[in-house]
Length: 168
Image (cartoon, rainbow, N blue to C red):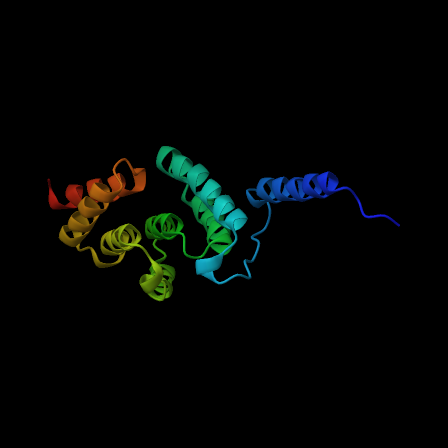
């Protein structure tokens, strides 16, 4: 038997990739077998797409149950996505799930050496808002983060939340 033409292999691979991305937003979590720092591009993209969808619904509708479910799926796809970790901590804070928040941040400490400066600043600001109530530190971290990444909506929310608690 002869091998199939290369073009049909490419179409098949692309079709499978599209099926994966569509299913990731609606199906059970898919475990990533790569180490977090080397997760597949497809998994990172799917996790970020879930985050974008959830962020809008979270801040528009305050649907915390939906957010935690979908963010868990995104975290399973890309465990080092700081956006996902920070928003998941916020969602759990609103539901009073502090044991899970504590565990989440303990697990994220293992990632610290592999995060960029902006990622560390954002995660630390979220930790200070959610876990420690250190709004002055959160304000400083969020401000530094936004200087590096202006326009980031979650970073803006962290800054506004810290400043709101400080009465600024």
